[in-house]
Image (cartoon, rainbow, N blue to C red; front, side):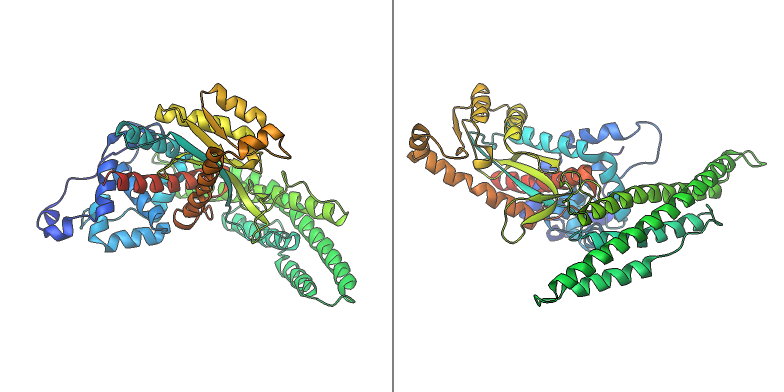
Length: 478
């Protein structure tokens, strides 16, 4: 692991001062990221002696800040940094040096995972507390949905995509040399035609044709389920033969050649075949889950949302209903955000599905106390946390004021408490947490996680919080 890059070249020394001077925010963030404590979370993911030199961690951290601060993709980030002398100076990349490739940044991000991002956020909060810029007297908590990168799921759409992807995965296995004589019929055209007919019937608006349209929808969904199940059965036969070919390919790749060296080309073919086999195995399992859901719905039973599969590529995304008018149901993960009076996010947490809010409050406050070494005086949240047990838990932690409206019809004594001036003022301040969440969604990537799975959502949201807190803390120290 490399923590710092190469020394500045002669080209940087002869640049005019105007080009070497960073803008205000980048200059302040640059000072904060100079601390070597931000490299420590990446140490467990690299071997100290063997392997190729990594991208310098100081460069990686600054690139990820720019990515989430300005809502850039990996490709556009590398392109913009390559074209900007100022951003090259900020990222510690020389004028004559290449910018890291987008795939290098992607692999480094997923390899280190959410543990490294959590370590970065904890290090930043500890450093801010040490610099006396972190106030924790009042904290507010709220939950939101971090949508996954999935389109709106329908039974017909998921089944048609599954049939198409099974055909594509089968061609990948054959191209890699596995099960070349096993038949796998491409049924994507038949599935697409039925999905198109189904969507055309759904556009019917007349009441007289409504029953007929529903009957057609049920019949087409049943036909799509049969097609997907047949494609999955053929794919399983292909998988059995492909796994035998994979075992043989691994044995051939392990045999040394006449000169004693191993065949690198055979190793690469073996790797391509192994990846294709694993992808098809996961796809067949997901297809059978979706077929089961469709048959359950056709039988008149709604599938359980906690286990419902809504995506082929993101197995952890779940339907979540938060009561929003524009989006009554969202598909992704449930996140909790805890911030202070300055808008700094003190704690965030991403969980799969739609867990209840109340049990998540006490662990969040405990993490805030541990990270900042400060005990909040006031904790406030919305009515979703309004339980007597929650207040008792927070009082045991030493929280003096717990301002959370109770669920249901409160008693006379509770009504007097909630109508007090201090209580109502704190409740009004709590609504600012919804604005903080909206700010994270608009400006720091929380509107859609572009990495699949719960682990991917934690990585994505963690980097967004890191960029947000860096910008906030840098502004406070200006």
